[in-house]
Image (cartoon, rainbow, N blue to C red):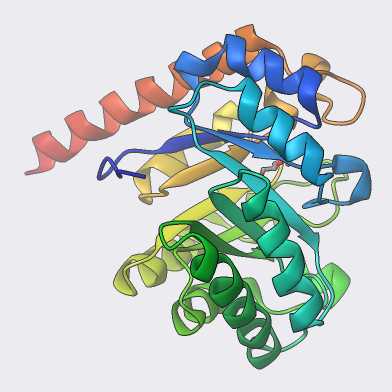
Length: 258
Ligand SMILES: O=C[C@H](O)COP(=O)(O)O
């Protein structure tokens, strides 16, 4: 995919084909459609045929991403699953390194994923995801993700939250540490993606620190509820409008400072 420098992209995660249709209605307001199965975890993997149906549902110019799951430390299993997501039509492949307790384990898993996916589709975009609330599940430190992504040949480092209990990205990794995450990712030539019950109120900070992709579900679901609410095209449009407003304000303040 061609990357617009210094632009925050919006990734929205429908839970299946019906919600992907709602994303398609709001296609002009989003950048990436991310297939997941929230009832199987924060980065729960959906079925291959769902990925394929969603690829057929959303406009061809919108990349489809797929989560491979909150994965165990089983590099062969995960590499094979990641290839399955790519064969099913996803061009962004996201892996949640849930069962990796050390950077070495995480690198092991992601090297396998990168090889499996890029042997099949060299321009696929591979994302290594850690968890902002890693301390609650005992997995690898979130700030290790840029180095893990870099050393395994990924395209992006990401953070999400593992436990969706209303706590947000910044509750676990405050903005100054997220800024360090983004800085390290950029220094390694990677993109930085951030998610975790992100709300419109977080967009100012995410914009200022130079985040490349913001991942959202709950904030664009009816009632702000990622489990019982459905994605609403009008909420996607409103969220995008807030992103655009912050982008304009940030550009103006940079121009003034310069
Ligand atoms: O990748 C993005 C996630 O689906 C974020 O979901 P959430 O905003 O409900 O935490």
